[in-house]
Length: 328
Image (cartoon, rainbow, N blue to C red; front, side):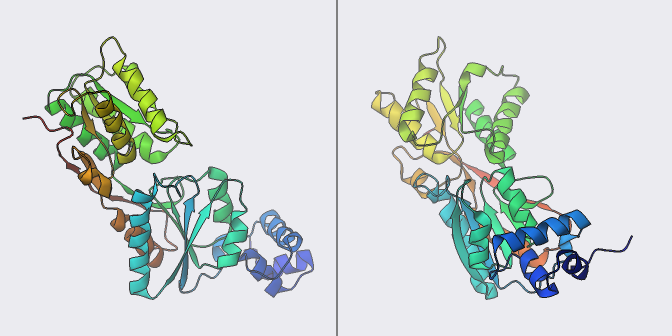
């Protein structure tokens, strides 16, 4: 069967080949009705969207979900963005930053910025990713994994394993994990590493010691509530591994406020190694992620593997032991 061309779509819709091409590339200068008409015809005729000429990448859009565009998330995603900016500057590429929410018309934003390629950082709903994929531009996910997409991630599984293994080695017996939503690939993998380390050490995984902290709008109070429940158990937690440093710092603040001594009464470990971790009192043990390297790798994947099969890159992580979990 011969391949469907732009000419076929033009004949089917009664539009010019130029209009069809601009519609499929999501370029400005036409109504949504025309754009939808072209897209529907292309899908109906079985057009292969990968045929759209990609050309040299001159502009990249860095997309961040609005739930990550917060004070709590910025210590992680700001360095990722910085790493991407650095790589773009070196290559003479313009980078636009766009914060998108699930209800916002993301394709309108893409048309406004006219990027040649897209980086999606952190979590995005499957329907948003599907809409972006239809744009037909090279795309890389950073700190997220989804089948059929090229992505770059820290070694979340290994990080969760190292943090838990460290707590086990300090002699802790009741190790809890504070997680965020397991819909996030990164948190799910960190949780898997936590469970694997317990399993390998032949330690029984107690479901009461795994607590999911609601991320939206509740801040430190949600973490305090989670810590209250862990410390009120008949056999309370003597250590806690938190899915990120912001949560770990809030957990530590609560414990210190309750008159507990960290790490003697309870050991605490975070994940990410944001700047505030080393500056905390006591300094926070954590799993270090090279955040700038994630951003750089995202740009490099777009430049060097734009049309190849989806590939996954894993960036190594490192356990950093500080006073919050140190045991003499």
